[in-house]
Image (cartoon, rainbow, N blue to C red; front, side, top):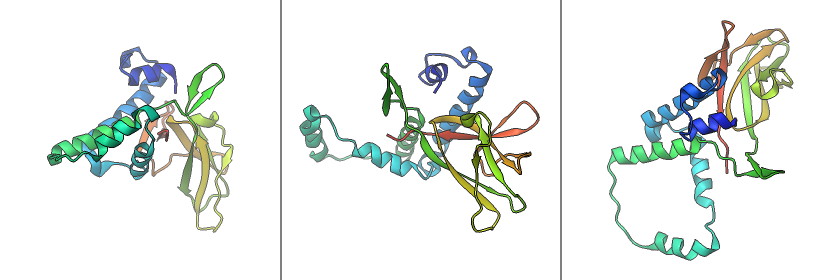
Length: 203
């Protein structure tokens, strides 16, 4: 993730201080966070449960293990109103949307999150070939989707860096098509719309 965008998400920069390109990405992140705040637990994405369970499975440090275990085993009564529960779930979802960069360390001590395998799909019955182009591959349709059973539904998987990305499909090498199933869109400045994809790192 670009340092200025990270600084914006951390509250260190305002939206006005970002470049035009980063303002669009920041707006996409803000929109995702607002959706989660509005929808609460009912609007959580399907992968949220797995991400939460992964977080819960993380082992505490040896120095704190015994203290944490005692705290978990201590009997207590907790009462939450439905509104409080929904707000807590929304807050957790927003935290999970924020990028993390502790998964791997490059030479020089710079942390970099691992790429996430994403499946792309397009229904294009009359197509001969379907490629995928986006800011994650310099808008070169290097990934060619497949329609193995001939039903007109083309699929392909690509490892994508965590962050907010824009992409389009390229049919038969010439026709640029916006993903009709994308959750968000962004104007490309040429009269078309790019599909917007938010990839969240998994720790």
